[in-house]
Image (cartoon, rainbow over all chains, first blue to last red; front, side):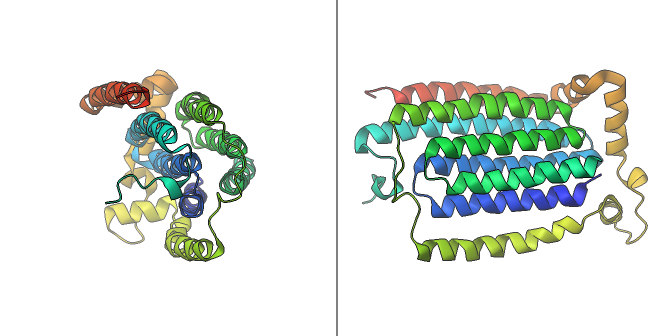
Length: 98
Length: 185
């Protein structure tokens, strides 16, 4: 039921997320775009779980957990970078440049 | 009826995702992303994943986006004209995205029958109910044990070790976030 449309929607959302990562400079919005891509992948899992059994939904669980951990650590890094540079603009985040 | 609701939710999800990446104000961006997540939660319910839909609203739209909003508030970010990259990057990005999404759009032609015939590797002979028994088994388990109970069985039996490792991951992430956000390392 609705397998093809779900996969199409998932591809479109993933593409929007990639485009957002490419065109934005704000590190926080970048993280939101990554969340958008993770959501697109979750939609693929749920759509295919209708036919392959509940393992797909369990994997969505794990994806959400990893997304939560990633958001917490990433936002903490952004906070400490902001303290250092007074900006979250990717232009100024070049601490690792040799 | 289901399809009409699906297409309404899908359109809303795509439009709010586009609004999310194009808004200059980070708070507006976050709110549009919450809209996308709500639409996706509705779609999960349509796809027989009611529990995932509820978790999507609680964890994603509730917890993670609140975390984002807190950080935006703490950093006091405002509209920044230099936030969006210039036109050359935008065009290259659009080209790259088209190159990614056009091959993926062929997935839209997938039907349960085609999926089944690819799984059984016998073109044209795929009966979804026979080749993919997991779906029927999942529906039966949902009727038998309820929405949450059906998911709990694979989570605590087949995926018990990954589940426990996830708890270590969360603990590490929590400790790491506290350490990173401290004023002095």
